[in-house]
Length: 267
Image 1: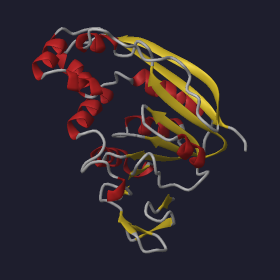
Image 2: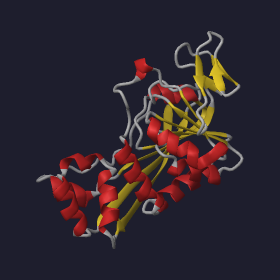
Image 3: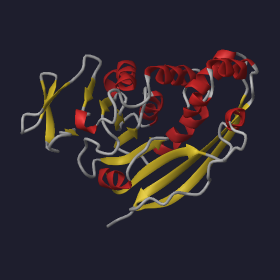
Image 4: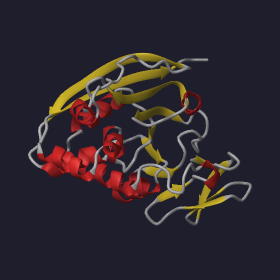
């Protein structure tokens, strides 16, 4: 199921504790997740999105503003009929739960470096999905473990993706398109630099197809605008007063996602 993050030996679960042959042990939390992020892999005391960002994202996503993206990713995943799936950088589990619904017979894992986010995810999903706290650059899974990995905005290493995904398995990525959140950028930058729409080359993988998803968000309540601003890195560019003024203006905000599918090439 999992590998020990300290010695890479298999972890076995017994009495709510994962332990490897070298007696490294990791407790299964009451909420149903396991923390496999040793201190030497942390880049800060509490890595990942802070609690305010996580709660803002949770409120925004649960309100359904990104539902078209969740549906598109779920349909793309279901089309390849995987048996074992990883949601890499799963956050508080909004997409993970919908991926599980799309492939109900598959085993689904969610991993994120934020303990706060994983705690929310595991508590909401129950036992249907296995969640863990871990680094995306040293994932605690055996080689060739997954038929499909979903990566929505998450950082990763090509070497880890190649190691984890089995031959002919699939990688589904979501990245921002050129006009994504354009109006927020215009509010903080004099000159706006658009995201690239070039297709990333990932070593060991062949690009199969791309879907571009564009629509506008029209808001009726400033609180929803505030939640969107708070959950993105651009939030740091606003003062509290500027955030409120921007939210009160109820701007129409453009959404632009690039959904790409790759397949692991045979050796």
